[in-house]
Structure formats: C-alpha cells, structure tokens
Image (cartoon, rainbow over all chains, first blue to last red):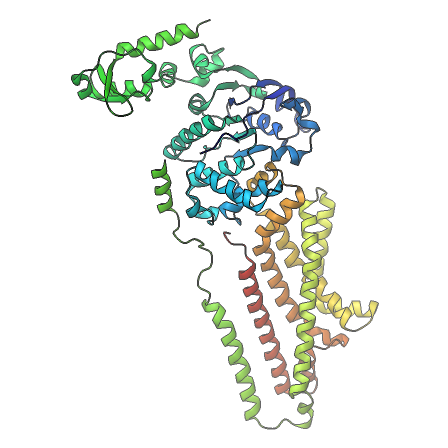
Length: 333
Length: 262
C-alpha cells in the first residue's frame, strides 16, 4: 500500500478561464472560475458537449486556454514548459491509451524514465504501483496491454498516471468504458486508493451517480461549462440550486442521499433475533442498501451486524426516514 | 478485489506473449523450396540439352551469371534502401505538415514517379545525366518511392489517437512521441511498403541494362537479340528467383522487427 512519502495534493485555481475556438462563434468554455483545495476530489458533471472535458484538459494544457489564468499551488501553469507541467500531472482518459508495444512495466515507467529516475528506483516503484492497483506484479509486469481485460487495462492506466507521484490527477471518464460490475469495483478501489494518497483530483463524468459516489465536491456544469452548482454531494441532493440541477439529479434524489449515509452512523433499535432472521446489513453498508434489504425481505425491520458478524442492533424503515430527515435539516441553511 | 483480479487473469490469454506463432509457416518454407526447385529445374534443363553453342557460351557460364546476379542484387537493394532513407522522413513530414500544398506536393511527386513508365524515366535520366549505375539507381528510387511513402503516412495515421494523446498528457515531447510511440507502432505498415518497393526494384532493375548498368536484364536482352531461348529462359528464371528471395527475406525482417504486443 502507498506510504507516508506519497506526495499529497496541491491546490488548483482557475480564474476566468475561457476557450474560444477560432472557427466557432460560441465559446466552448466561458469565464470558468474554480478554487480546488489540496487533496480534494472534484467531479465535473454535465451533459455531453458542455465543455467539462475541455475545462479539464486546459489544466494540463492539452487544450490551450484562450484567456484566463490557471495556477497549481500558486504557480502559473501557462508560463511553465508544457512537458514539465504534464510530467507533474497524472492523466487518465476513458480510452486508457496504453502503449500497445510496451509491456505493462514499460508503460508504467514512462514518466519516471522521462524524469530520469534510476532503473532500480523505477522498477521498485512499478512493482509497488501494480500492487496498489491490485495487479500481481509477477503476473503482469511482462505482459502486453492487449493481453489484459478492460478493467485490468484501466488499473494499469491509473498506475501509470500515479507513477511519478504527481500531486494532481486529471481523469476523464476513466471508468466510462467498463461494464457496470467492473466499474463499481474500480470505483470502490479508487475511493480506497484516494483515501490513502490524498491527491487533488479533477474527475470528469456524465454519470451523476458516479459523481455522488466518488466526489468530495461536485460541480454541475451547464453549456459553455457554466457552473450551475458547486457543492458537496449531500447538499446538492438536498438543495438543488436550479431546475437544471434537479433535472440532472433525476428521479430518486432521496434514495441517492440515502446512499451517502452509513448504517453505522444511524440511530438504531435494539438487536433481536427476529429482526436478524428477516435479513441483515453491515454497519459499513449505506442506508440505501439497508432499505433495499428491508423491502426485499418484505418486513419493516432488519438486523444490523458489525464487521465481525455480531448483531449490534436493528434498523426500521421509520428510523431510515428519520435519519434522512435529520440529514436534511442539518444541511438546511 | 484480489478475487476479482484473479478472475480477470483467468479470462486473459495464458501465453505471456501471444505474438510469435509458429516460426515455420507454409509461406516461410514454401518460398525457399520453390526457389530451389526452379533453379534445379533450370540447371537440369541446361545440362540435358548439352554444351551451349559459342554464342550461348558467352552468357551461359557461371562467371558471367554470378556477376550479373551480383549487379542486380546490389542495384535493387541499394535503391530500396535509398527509398527508405528518403521516403520515410518525407512520409513523416507529409503526415505532420498542416500545409495541404506540401502534402499534396510530396504525394503527387511520388505518384508521378510510379505512374511514369520506368523505362521512360531511365532513358530520360540517361539523356540528362548520362548512362551508368548512378542513373539506374536514381530511376529506381523515383519509381519505388510511393509504397514506402504511402505506407509511412498510413502507418502513422492508423495509430489510435488516444495513445498519442496519453503520451502527450504524460509529458513526452513531440520527438519522443514520434520515436518511442508512433514510429514503432507504424513499423509493420512501413515495412510492408518497403517489401513492395524491394520487389518492385528487383523487377524494374532488369531495364538497367539499357543504360549500361548491368544486371540480369543483360542476360535477357542477350537472349532476345541473339535468338537464344535458353539464355532468355535463364535470365527470366534467375531474376524471378531473386525477386522471390528478396520478398522472403523482407518478410523475415518484417516479422523480426514487428514490435511485440502489437
């Protein structure tokens, strides 16, 4: 697992950033401003063509902004050498873009090599990273990308982006091309990884559920990358700033909010065998899963277990809606 | 998660490198056998019909034939290598440039080179810069440019743009992207073009004899002019075998240089 010598995140600030393509009358991104704190995982969510990817790609200057300023830890990105800048920013795209003629080890060591790391240091780092993304180094080091499944390739993509331990990561729908089961696994893994490495991450997606699941804060973007709302998932779900945002949240905002609340943090009833018979949830599950389990069992209450499987309480539908209500009033300004 | 990783492993290929198939494929063995059979049949035919007459004797001897074969191979390989040295950089330039004029000029030039009958080009060049080996090479180079040029452009164009984008996003300079990513990935396509050019060169090098540059064309012309079918046949069979041999060698090189994992 990653250790204490991991570089943690940097702050990013975009100020009045605009991208205007010469042959179009409308700007792709207009006057975009955003402050991102070190170690934050920011989700840019919006419909296709709203400029979210363009906005992200201006941070590592794959796309050059027309005007405005971008700083990372106070350093002006636009005055840096492009390649020096990019070697300090991890970059993961949906299509992954692994180099097909290089082994997994060679793919992951690209940036360390560009930075002139020693062979030993690079090799050690590659092994460490493959373990971090749950790929056995012995099995995978010498394989070629086409010998890996889509999920494995995306893990290599993440490892490659993390190779030189950059403070900032840019991720463009990295899990968009994988099947739902693999995607959920990758997301869960990614959350756990981010908990330990604490990078500043700008993550682009069009999937609002993914945004809720992963983001510390979500920016819901409209056309020309206009920020419709920029807040924590819970607050956006509880108080959508406009009809545009609510339409983007879609049906079932309450259920989505339940997914953010953990069973362990909810006021529970006493444990009883009868409840446990109807079904059980773990304290680490969320309330949406608990509700799902209750409805599935056809009852009103289910048992709650701790990680070791011991009964610690029970949870009823009333208690779940109470918890949701408490959450709403806590969020209300 | 580790369970998932283990399951993923089982669904991927078990071979560490799935690239190299059988080394001895039908084509790898077939071509050399064909060459040996053709040359043996030729030798048997020449032996069975007895001593050549005095005119045939001029061409039908080992010393003369080996000298022509040597010239022929030298001319065609030299021309093909020169084509590679010129057409690959030109192809890179043509695929890099934003100017439609430059790209049009480069491809147009190569197209004209190939569309013009080689015999016309070689005679014209001989009139301008004189006869001899150099002239023959220049004509062959002009004639053989197109396959390598076109395949260099096609080879670069077929690369997944997202592979290039991720290379860029990782901070590779344009030159690093070209030499470490794009060219290695384009190698199979470029080599296929080189192979075509090489075989072209062997065929077209037969006309080098018209400007006194030697080669197997000389044997063929001698056979035609002096009405000696045996000489003509010898020239034709040998030059065909050279072409087959070149194609075979180029195929081997293609397989060796093709990047693993592609």
